[in-house]
Image (cartoon, rainbow, N blue to C red; front, side):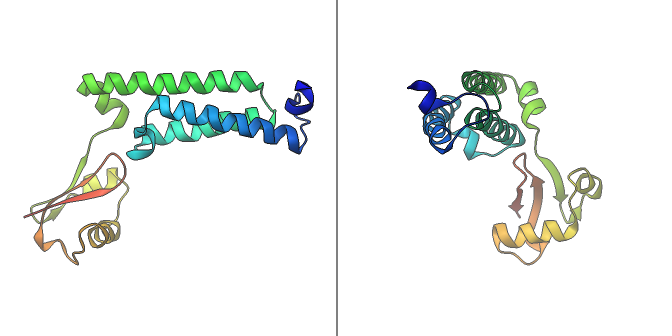
Length: 159
């Protein structure tokens, strides 16, 4: 009965993939809960990597291209690594900066910092677009500083 519902290998029918997807949904939910909601909240590069890898690995178990419970175990290891690195980042600023990065100053006191803009791969039009979207200003006249944040957004500090 188990093999009829669960299947083996990559030759799975609709019912078998559906049963696997149903079970995997709850496993993924549990893993995300264990990993913490910050994975989806801040969306740093660190968090995005976990989201992409977790989805890719868990999908292999549903499709049968890898053993089901091996994909669950690999996903649990990734969540454990994520939690461990988050814990270390919380306690050690150097590890935090290494894993998550730190904000990059791109504008200060009336001057665009072109070297930092280049590091961030930003153009002046990107900066101006973010200015309009974030604080509804058409120019940098009222801005003291702007930073490229670790989550990819640009933040502005007004004068």
